[in-house]
Structure formats: structure tokens, C-alpha cells
Amino acid sequence: MKSQSRFMKFLGGQDLLFGLVIIILLGISIFIYDKISFIFHPFFVIIATIAPPIILAFIAFYLLNPIVDLLERLRIKRIWGIIIIILGISGLLTGVILLTAPTIEVQITSFVNNFPSYVGQMFVNFTDWVENSFLGPYYEEGYNWVISNFSDIPGMIGSYIGDAYQGVRNVASTLTNVVVALVTFPIILFFLLKDGTRFKRYFIKLLPPKYRNDMKHILHNMDVQVGSYIQGQIIVASCIGILLFIGYLIIGLEYAIILAIIAAITSVVPYLGPTIAIIPAIIIAIVDSPFMLLKLALVWIAVQFLEGNFVSPNIMGKTMKIHPLTIVIVLLVAGNLFGVVGVILGIPGYAILKVLITYLYNKFKDRYNKYYGDEYGNYEEIKEEK
Image 1: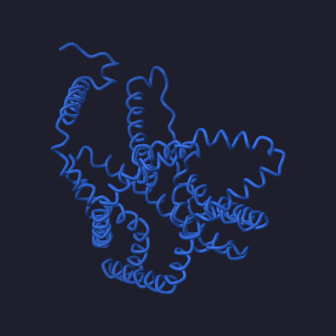
Image 2: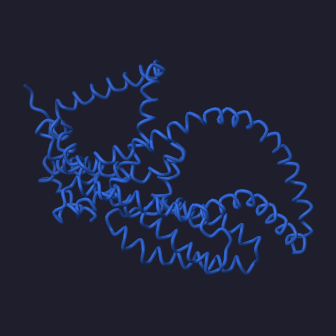
Image 3: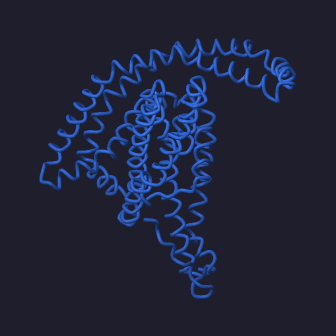
């Protein structure tokens, strides 16, 4: 048998041909699927039904599992620790809801009813300011341009009413999915907390022994990356919500609790979330008075300073450092592909993909060092981020 060249050995030799055959078969499978995708519609319905409770359960798992592990180290049986935590959190949430529900309900009702008038008043104030400023001579020309270019907006809105009506017809289905998710997610969470390690071991044992150590390493890195992000981001978002609520109360901004809740929820999405959260607060502050807008700016700057210099560095740590530009690109791409779900899960998905690519890159370096290192020099080892 003719000996293979070093380059072919580097690429995998006969394994390369096997890999190419697999890629070709995969491409043929995708082509066939594109032609008969309607057959798999029931399967996608099942996935869409079970995915939300599983995602919620995993998020709660990463938040609660460290506490369960702590109780286990304190010699409390794991199952009793899980029951104590679930009952404790359920009782705490119930108490908080009962105490705050009346106030929140009143603020939500008032906010929903009055917010359109706030927006209208903001435009009126802006128009008055423009007419009385140096931009006054250009106001009429600009107004005519807006009318000529956007006069068909009512017609555009009307064209979407049919789509909106069609969407309303799906409310019953959406509510059903929400109820199913809320009912089943605690059950999934319980078994994840109880048998999560056992599930992982069982999955690894299904693989050939040759690949078990690599898979164990990959799963561990994924667990660390995703877990640290979820824990840190939710804690940071909660801190932002609490700090803004205190700040809004101090300056006397209306709807303080609603605006703080909006900020806490949207801050789960880094960078873009806080920008979205400040918009309703700005509108309300502008309508109130220019001085209120100044006070809001001071509160926002103070909260961002505290979050950026004290909260995030101590909570998020250095486990998952991602450049801000990378985060923005990931959020834009994930949002365009998968909508709101993509925006929320884009960064954890990026973390998982990063672990896989890092693993493959390390394998590539090992093969290069094996076949070319003696002649051209080895790849330098890249230390993993801690």
C-alpha cells in the first residue's frame, strides 16, 4: 500500500474520505428534507410545546443548583434540600405578589391608559419648542415633508389589522402553551436538580469510551460558561431594577415600580436591554418637566456607574468575557433569525458555540504540532479564560 503524504495524514488520511462521504450524505438529507418538510410538522409542534418549560427549567436550574449543592455539603439530603428551596421560593414569591399586587395592578392600569397621552404630549411639547427656536422657519417645510411621505400610515396600519386579527385567533393556543409551560417546568426543574449529574453520566456512557473524556470536558466547559452567564445576568438585572426603583422614588418619577420592573426584565439582554428600558422613563420625564429629565439622567448615570464598576465585575467575574461589539453582533443576528427568543438566548448559544469551536481548534493545533511541529514550530498554547 502506497504510503500517505504528511499532508494527507494531517487531514486524517482515509478518515478524511469517510468525513467527506458523511458531509455529502448530510447534504443529500437536507435537500430531501427541504422537499418533504411538511411531514415533520407534528414533530416541530412537539418541540415548540416542550421547549419553553425545558428552557425555563434550565434557567432556574443554574440559579438554584449552587444552593442545593451548598445544602448538600451541609449534610442535608439533596431531595430535602430541593423541596426546602422550592417551597421557600414559592412562599416568598407568593408573599411578595400578595403584598405588591394591588400597587402594581393600579400602576399598570394607569400606565397603560395614560402612556399614549404622555407620548402625544411629548410631541406637542417638542413641536412648541421647535416652532419657538431657530428651527422655526424650517418647521413648516419639514412638517409638509412628513405629511407627504407618511400620509399613508393609517392605510398601512389598516393593512396590518387583518394580520393582527389572525393573531388574536391564536390567543387560546398561546395561553394553553403558557399554562403547560408553567405547570410542567417545576416538575422538569425538580428532576434536573435531583438527577442532573446522573443524566450527564448516562449520556456520556452512551458514547464510545474513546470520546468520553472529550465529551466530559466539553460538557463541563458548557456548564461553566452558560451557568455563570445566566446566574450573573439575572442577578445583575435584578440589582439594576432595585437601584432604579430606589432612584425613581427619590426623584419622584411617576410609575417608579413599573419602570423599574421593565428595566430589570429588559436588562437581561446586555447593552440593548438598558437602552430600551430608559425610553418610557424619558418620555414620562419630558412630559413632567425639564428638571425631572435632568434628575432622571443623573439617576441613570449613577445606576450605570454602580452596575459597571461594582455590580457586574463582582457578580459576572471573568468567567465569560465577551467584547461588546461581539455581543451586539450576536444579538442582532440571533434576533433577526429567531426573534425575541433569539435575543434572550443568543449569548448562551454563543457561549456553547464558543466551547465547541475552541475544542475543535485545540484538536487542530494538536494535529498540526504532531505532523508539522518539529519542522515549523509548535502552536503556542492559549490559556483558557478563567
